[in-house]
Amino acid sequence: MLSDISAEAHALQLRHADVWIQQVRPALADAGIEIADWAELTDTERESLGEYFQAHVFPVLMPLAVDPAHPFPYISGLSLNLAIRIRNARTGRQDFARLKVPPMLPRFVEVPSSGEILRYIRLEELIANHLGDLFPGMEVLDHHAFRLTRNEDFDIEEDESENLIQALEAELLRRRFGPPIRLEITDDMDDVTLELLIKELDITDQEVYRLPGPLDLRGLFDLARIDRPDLRYPPHLPTTAVAFQPGDSNERPDIFKAIGRADVLVHHPYESFATSVQAFLDQAARDPHVLAIKQTLYRTSGDSPIVQALIDAAEAGKQVLALVEVKARFDEANNIVWARKLEKAGVHVVYGLVGLKTHCKLALVIREEDGVLRHYSHVGTGNYNPKTSRMYEDFGLFTADPQIGKDLTRLFNELSGYAIEKKFKRLLVAPLHLRKGLLRHIGNEIKNAEAGRPAHVRIKVNSMVDEQIIDALYRASMAGVKVDVWVRGICSLRVDLPGVSDNITVRSILGRYLEHSRIFSFENDGNPIVYIGSADMMHRNLDRRVEALVRLSTPEHIQELHDLFDLAMDPGTSSWHLDTGGVWTRAVGTDDEPLVDLQDRTMSAVQGRRRRKRTVR
Image (cartoon, rainbow, N blue to C red; front, side, top):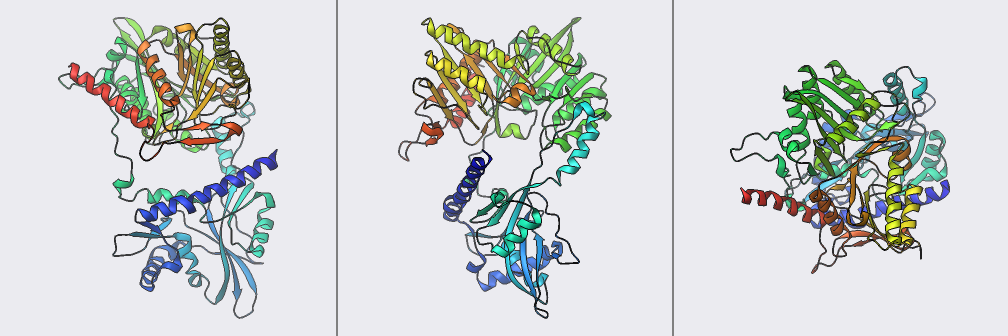
């Protein structure tokens, strides 16, 4: 099994490299942005780059020799390095040196030019052509780029730790020294250098990835900052959800009054996170009638206005509970920093339940109105992160429904206590009841289909791998239930099983925004049941995380999600189709008749709703 995975991983990385060589680099050149090789430069250009090297690169380089007096250096994970073989001109002795490409410098160095074409050279190539300056008196025999990946996964034995934060900080220190699991090398690396790396890094031949073209293409983010608006998506300014728009006198909207009138469903990034979620918490922090705020935080930005709103609320004397998931993978250090910042401000910070990650996206505001406590709730599909909210597609429900408020109150109490044991009225909560609830709804669709009643299951997730859910969808398909699955990432569901998956359609949408929302819809004999929430169909989500789905009750919201699904599944929409053998096929149409871009169409629809409200006024 591991050898099969390794073979697929090698093939995937070769495809990745080929995309750069055959598609991205030529397309950039056609647009007037060339990634040049040293051999293609003129003497004048090389001289100018030599001056740049001496002034900006040479001072920060740290060549590390390997000889009896210098052991093989530690290679940090994902760093880009040059493996260099040198020979002492006087003694004839050969040695090895490692040179780390400085990560703080631009990966692509602009070549001075007076023409209209922008030309760049890779930093490692600039360094490689000035190695003589780093090893005076030595002959440079060979040099090759390489990159090492270390296993940075770890587990915290929470039940054996008196202090989760301290245990986590200790593991974060150890993470840097995880065992090597992958060595990427350029395809021209000689056997002598490779054998030395394999021996010193203690890895196997199977863990070596020999690749054409440059390693570590994360540096392309630098090129994305070039001022070429003609190569970018047209600017898109998120609109404010209709319910939260200012009144005729342009006064600041009362978020609580708007939610009190009717549930509000917001769709990010088409609708603004700042004027909805952020405004909700900002107003709660300022409002003297607000008594308490409770919120889960899985990932957020370091300078998050969400965190600041919670701090402001605590400093204003309100009861504030922040359930911080410090074990969010690769965000642990960041989460620890602002968890301590919250604690210092007087926020009650808890870290969830032992053995479970808290992944649900929940906020609850308790407000006193005419002597009565009222609950204002937000349940979302995405993190409370203002930065990713501009790139990730997500839904969020604002509601003053008292039953949802009661459900969230009890759920927060259980999260800050010891266990989640009971069922909820309007929520499906993992790990105990979410999978069971979805299986129950799928089973109900099967009964309806067998009785000749309308039956339809629609599911939108990031990943679909849970065997129990997949088997239930196969049973539904065999019973005649129409099954539409919209998945962005991993999908173990098959559509090529005769007699089993005949009624299953699987689509994926990849575009300007990352499709991130999770939606679960069941026809229910013409009375649709629709949930949104945080859970993907994976073991980790359903068995080892606290996840929450909330049931929508507003017909307009249900119809909005169904319309979105219909558009995603429409043959006239540009998408990826899961076909025979688990192969994804892209459908984009032709230059003369391009297919519909779902995200563009959604953007236009949201803007249209705002224009219609202005017309009504």
